[in-house]
Image (cartoon, rainbow over all chains, first blue to last red; front, side, top):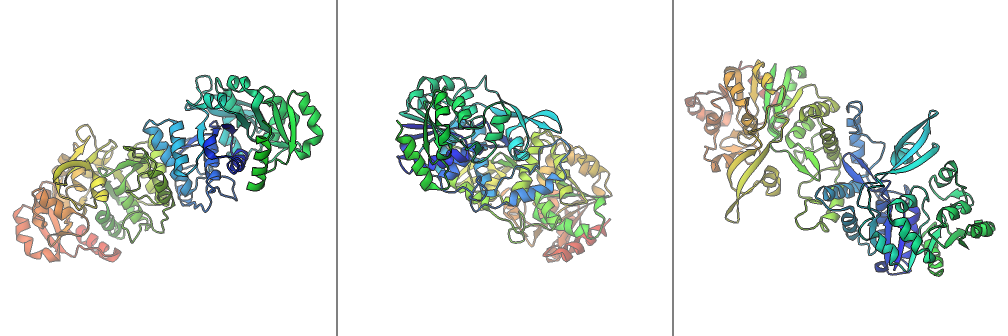
Length: 319
Length: 319
């Protein structure tokens, strides 16, 4: 049994490769829900959906999120109402684009949650609808919201993750990150068992701060990870000092971490014994191992499924 | 000032004609909300939307509801989830088709209501978004649900209006109609004043039972209508014994009313002094007037805006 801690795009690609190598019934993905937001009254889970759509072969290849062959009629029509919404209203906002087909996912999820289903139950239903064989576990059924303190016009302001990530295109400095609701949150019902009982835990190449960070922050998860770190492998999302995608490098630097595989090793030393870094970072091997983490070099940049499969095989070969 | 009691398609057509003759700022439409439903967590107001879209010239000409040039990606995508929804769940249901552009209206309305706006405020915002100059008043800001007792497989069963109208395509016998919530409901804040203060009240050619009926059933409305019936004109939705559109004729008959202009006259005698009937019903003039209602014959079937305009002129000429 293999359990993967997953954020969005990088994790989705890794999982695509993994499912080409092992049977899906052996795989559990514990997915970050700190990025989730409610917009237009709809519950939107970007990382769960990115993983689902990617594994279904339905991800929008140009955007890297949302569905392929998407149409945008609803959002275009909503722009008409954006002009009449009173000041302070969040109705009619179109800055977070939801495709028409994608809307169906949010409509279904929102309705099921309103009916009393848990996030875990809904994620399983959505995975089933897309014919995915793996187990998809939201990190928690409780509301946890990643809040980001950014610098805007010279002043610090705290915003929701998507307001930072999509609204500001992550082009602003991050001063702090916290998880609202985390103290009262519990791990999803199968999360700790999936970590504890796995033969291998993989920390996917996702943002260590805002994708893997919230999963680890759920009370009980860090301890479960630490207790079985001997067969946990992390894949560095930082290659030659830069993030493959997204703001992980800038965010690590502005939060006082080294934006490098060494910085990643420091963040993961308590929960993983092995860090897979890209061949481009071979020179950092000793520095990584100095952090108490075995360093393995391999091609980690996944342009397509073949590279993802090769990376998965590398990871599987490590334990 | 002209105040019109309005259901869906017939009322929307009449209003189109009226707005070609008088300035929109002089017109108030009090619209039935008994047909409203919540589906996928979205608040849907079919009559308000049909009037809005029609007056905006944006109604779907083939369907008679929804928007022209509509796409159906969200509903098509929702069908995937319909297959995994647990028994008893209303998530993923696709029997009530919502177009992608139409969804924007429901998303906006739902969010605004969640923010605490009243139905009256939201209807005004939506009318403004579409550039309508008339005043659109939902009959009430309170929840009122038209419930229909139908005969199915030989047994009486009560269903929501849209379950009867769309779900069963109104092809079943109606035994009873009631308005859940009506006792506690109040008219919308401007509704009674719009009736009392109007120079002319028009009861549009809508279903007397389930379109005009709920408006009259809102506590206070019937009395306001009765008190000023001397300048109230109704247009019969029944022509030569049949409804122009929809089940009004069958519904009237199965509820014990005569499916004719005479039956309409009986239903409206307490609130209108004049009934406009189609030329095809000229022979019923004496029978209508026997009910205590002046009978005026005119072409009432509105195939297009020119005929609607002519009908509006006829009505305006009566007071």
